Image (cartoon, rainbow, N blue to C red; front, side, top):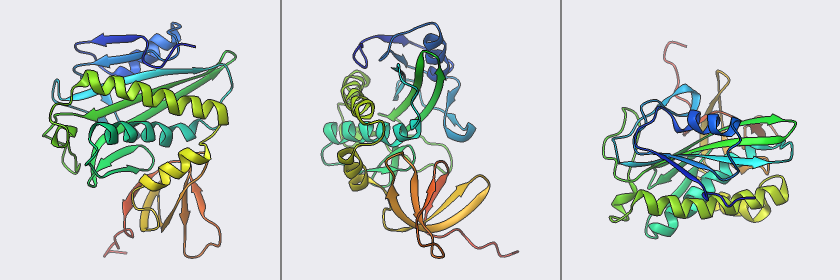
Length: 254
């Protein structure tokens, strides 16, 4: 099996690296292929959001990850890919205070520096995962409501090519661990917990149109967020949602 990042397909301008990587995957592009763009005009984020960046300011990539197995715990890959990016950020910016915000953001000093989006498809030939990774390198303008930052604040000479090399190595490492274990390994989970934003703190989670309050107890081996609610003895496992710190605000009209 080819190394992650061994084949790089670079575009100066593209609609969405996720969509193009998906097209290449359907055409048989090998495991580890990465689609890279200098500019995205229709970048995708979670929950239908768009991902925009000033031209040349970010690492904009999507990776094709293949397995001959029918992967059941694909959800475990989201925190693992976040871990791969967090490790890379720590490596290039050792002084930065790095955290992982479940399910797929990487933060520095509480501000978003990277985002991840995964899609997967299973067939008789196995499982194909497209891992979209965007890292703010030089960006200084962020959408309203987004507390963002750029890696250049901690590593002024950072380049997209260097980040691409470092992310390739780190992503390859977590992929091999995932393949060997079929889930998040104990060692990787310990590291995710050390980096997890707001662990053991009160959070609010919006999922499937409902808002839940509780303590962020941790992450499960299958990637689920473990939410300890006051009225329950055991933590609730959540597989998708948007989290924020503290309890949900009270509606004065309620």
